[in-house]
Image 1 (cartoon, rainbow, N blue to C red):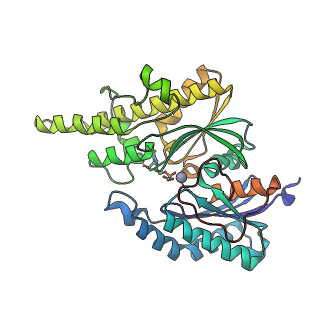
Image 2: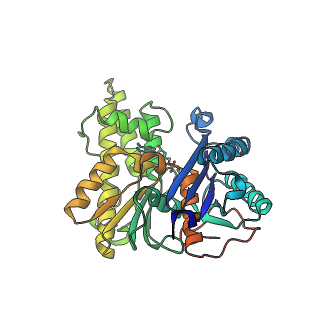
Amino acid sequence: MTAADEPLVLGIETSCDETGVGIVRGHTLLADAIASSVEEHARFGGVVPEVASRAHLEAMVPTVQRACETAGVALHDVDAIAVTAGPGLAGALLVGVASAKALALSLGKPLYGVNHLAAHVAVDQLEHGALPDPCLALLVSGGHSSLLRVDDVTERVTPLGATIDDAAGEAFDKVARLLGLPFPGGPHIDRAAREGSIEIDFPRGLTSRRDLERHRFDFSFSGLKTAVARWVEAREAAGEPVPVADVAASFQEAVCDVLTRKAIDAAAAEGIEDILIGGGVAANSRLRALAEERAGKNGIRVRVPRPGLCTDNGAMVAALGAEMVARGRTPSALDLPADSSMSVESVLV
Ligand code: KG4
Ligand code: ZN
C-alpha cells in the first residue's frame, strides 16, 4: 500500500472536556485540532458535564474547519469518519456522535463508532509506527486506570486489571487541590515534584501479599489520597508549613511506583515484551522515566506517545478509525448509540 492508498480518516473526540478533531492518512498525522473547555471547569475543581456538552456544541464546527485547513484537505476528500462512542460523559459523547453521523451521512462516507480507550492505544501508531502484537497497555487518565492486553487494537482488547476506586489522574487532581495547586492538577504536581524530594512514605494501594491474591493487576488510589490529606492536615494542625514540593514528589512516586510495578508484572505474566503507556497521566515525567528504567531491567520495551497525543485528542480517534479501514472492519450503523459506560472489550460499535 503506498501512502496515497492509505485511508484518509477524520476522527472526532468529545468524551470529556476536549473537542478534538484529528485527520490522519494511515499512520501519518495531518491535523490535530483541539478546543478545550478546561478553563470553564477550573473553578469547580472538576469537569461539569453540562458545561462540557455546551462547549462541544459551540466548538465542533470551527474545530472541524480548523482541522481541514491544517491538513490541507476538503471534507469530501475524507474516506471515513470515526468518533468516540464511549466511555465518557453521556451528553458530551452525544455531541460528537451526532456530529459524526451528520458528516458521514451528508458526505456518504462510512462511520466508525470506536472505544475511547482503544483510541488511546492506537494513537501511538502515529508516532512509533505499527503496534507490536500483542502489547500490554497501561492506560492512565482522569477517567480510567487500566491494564489491557492488546492482541489487535481493532477487535481484541482484554482487560487484565483496573482501578477499584479513583483513576490515577483523579488522584493527581484531588491531591493538587489539597495542596492549593490549580486544576487539572497532574501537570502542576509533575512540575512541583521536580523541586521536591521523595521523603514521605505514602501507601502503595493493593500491593500487600493479601491484596495481590485478589487484585494483582488492579489499582486503588483512594487510600493514598486520604493518606496525603491526613499528612497535610497534621502539618497544618501543628502550625507547620506544608512542604508542597516534597508532598508532590512523594505522592507522585507512590503512584508511579505502583503503576510501573504492576504493568511490568502483567507484561511478564502474559509473556509480552512491549508496554505502551497512554492517557493524560502518561504525560507525567516521573512515570515515563521510571517505566523506562524498570522495563529496561526486565528486557521489556516501553512506548509512550508525546504528551500532546497522551491527553484526549481527535487524532487518536482518527488513528483507530484508519486502522479499522485498513483491516477491513465493518462500519457502524448510522443509528449507533453513544455509550457512556462502554466496556473496554467492545472496540467498535
Ligand atoms: O486522558 P485525559 O486528557 O482525559 C481523560 O480521559 O480523563 O487525562 C486527563 C488527566 C487529568 O487528571 C490530568 O491531571 C492528568 O491527566 N495529567 C497528568 C499530567 N498531565 C495530565 N497527570 C500527571 N502528570 C502529568 N504531567
Ligand atoms: Zn482519555
